[in-house]
Amino acid sequence: MSSNTPAPAPEPIRELVLRVMPMPADSNANGDIFGGWIMAQVDIAGSIMPARLSRGRVATVAVNEFVFKQPVSIGDLLSFYATITRVGRTSITVHVEVMAERDPENPHVVKVTEANLTYVAIDREGKPRVIAT
Image (cartoon, rainbow, N blue to C red; front, side, top):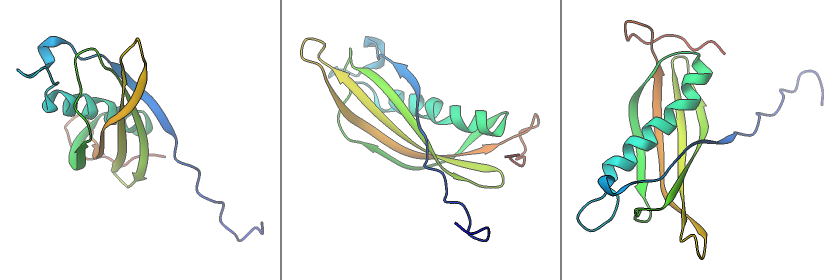
């Protein structure tokens, strides 16, 4: 590679950022886990890498896409994987995938949810701040 050729962009890192098991209080009358509960967990999981990268507070500014692929049940062990897909001047976009480990007697893993969220780095007054990379 010549000195004028830019280095290739690094591969995005997919990181396990959260694991949680939904409980009966998180379910609806049909025994499925509330979508809002899953959305809250995705928001928490999605904020972990941006907070670390920006070295401070972040706030959710957009849920760009949110797809429920399969229902989640009580007893599913949920693993949340995050990948940073874009870093701007003050914002970071993250892709979150949620995998469910099901049926301990006959274990299998399925993707139940995925989402793209954007966070903005904020200062103590809640104003956007530049991300120092």
